[in-house]
Image (tube, rainbow, N blue to C red; front, side, top):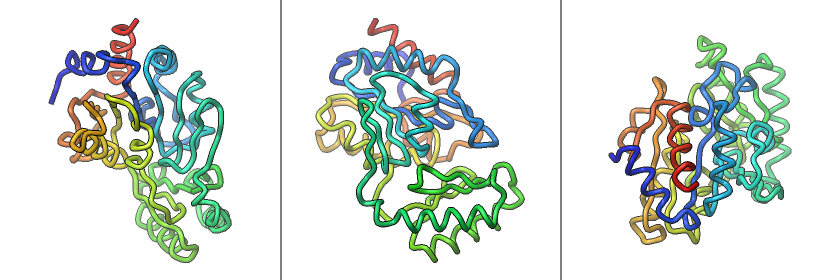
Length: 259
């Protein structure tokens, strides 16, 4: 583990050759019961705007749709990667991974069926590319929701991604935060990723591997701790901060250092 001072020093040594990547839910935004109620910590957009103007690349890598991220973080120059890499927006240009297109009809059919079988607050369609079922608002229904998700995913040829108190049905393609991170750090010397959940562990592993095989000179893996953090988080990161306010405060220190 390294401390906050060492983290700031590592990330400000050569800003133009450094990539800063951050998860959204649980990292920049507190975890909430209803997915639609999530908003970034108030200081986050301004801090990200300062960083985007000085660093080689600053991006959000999230399971959320790009449209949601753009609405919640209207920051010029911020790279937005949504649905774990299935869609992205760079310099205002929106693209979808072409591998998902053959599966969009299946996603639409699965979404319609889920909306018929479950309360609307438990079903979150995502840009027509995937659909997530949440049981945080109804924890007693977790087993039933998981069973329904498995049945429908299997019938429509979709895969299941388990996240914190949720399961996402999505096209059966190889994509996760490691794949997205690999593309975003290419050509840079230093990279950092901040995240809090199971879905962020592949990104941390990718940074470790990139240093090991020489693609990066240095990497900083920032874990955002909460009572719901997976036990693997502590051993997968280089520094731990306590929730979104502490992460935003650390990023503000980085922004202050580079001016």
